[in-house]
Length: 86
Image (cartoon, rainbow, N blue to C red; front, side, top):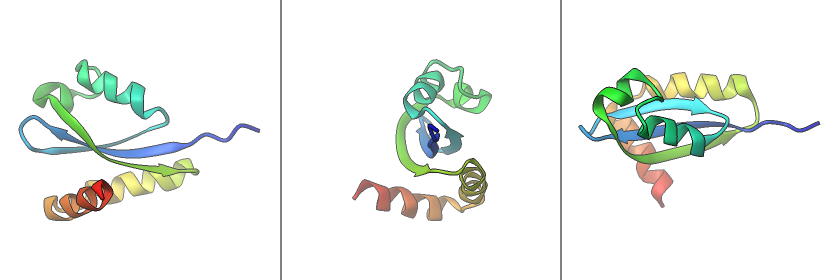
């Protein structure tokens, strides 16, 4: 059986805000955001860069993690992003 991978990601938008999402195909999803078709929020503010990505084997755990990160303060998101860049 082919098991899917799920990814939780953070995008930095052109106005400096962060957008958190989840997908099974990060490259395609990033392209959708760049084209303004990923979400209304990213279409409105524009995407600067993918700044964080983490992989999960379980869909529900990925969903829970996405919700958790969305609840983070900006400072906590920045710390997470900085740890990813190392």
